[in-house]
Length: 350
Ligand SMILES: Nc1ncnc2c1ncn2[C@@H]1O[C@H](COP(=O)(O)OP(=O)(O)OP(=O)(O)O)[C@@H](O)[C@H]1O
Image: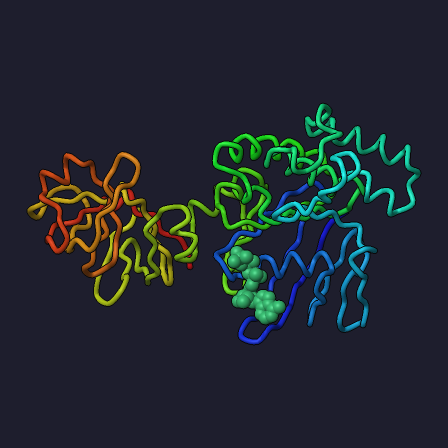
């Protein structure tokens, strides 16, 4: 029960062209900034829009194949969708909402209600089956929507920003529960989000979409340790540069060289966290480090630290303690020395 898709959708000024695969039981998060094409991808998988090119094969069945002139309509796809705002029927109880799908597919009333009862019990809502959507909290409504999506035994489960409608606190609880509920679904799951935390906590694998293209894919550890675009680097809070390596020396931006821990030849990325950048009032010496002069461009709070954005031979973010900031007299326009140990600069082939 696997998904194999190549989604091509052309719009004026925007093209989605993304390969997407997911194994049975695998949760794949489609993560990307606004306008990246996540919703378009989800809608294409659900059959709400047709592909212009490519294919969607689910469990060996072609659902959309423009070249072969095949298109399976949404109601004939074995797909369950949890929409961003859940789209529960307001006049139906939680139980009736969940039983609705099976009823439409010809399941007898008593059987559909028994199934809905069981699913609502599974998501911890046994005591709320009779309530209407407006009597449910956001987190409860989200679970009803999930139960409803699972009620038709879908082969593929699609979730559109599943936690976006919840407040921060409910979000935290629901995220943890949702992970458990998703593991009960035997087919693949594709969830769309622009929240990196949702993606990393809910998914086995991340597919990063930018401007309609897949720019990186892998598990959370692989993506966070080796970002390949500015968007991903910002998500995980790393400084990222593309450069050309000769051994441990990497030329990044013009003539500026960074010494890194590992030796490479050719095009590489260099990444390091803002906490690895130390700032000094005078040029530091000693140990194998990179030092350069930089000017403070911006200052902001970042947890307990102060995030300092610096311009110079490279744009870089550094985290310093408030005490260090006072000691250095950090203010906009101030010139300081930045220092980075070679051992803290990770490099990997581009
Ligand atoms: N029906 C349409 N006609 C024309 N352009 C469209 C249509 N639907 C979406 N687009 C464009 O396609 C691009 C991708 O939109 P999409 O909603 O898929 O992105 P997204 O990643 O889901 O963004 P968000 O996180 O903001 O929801 C956008 O540039 C959007 O303007």
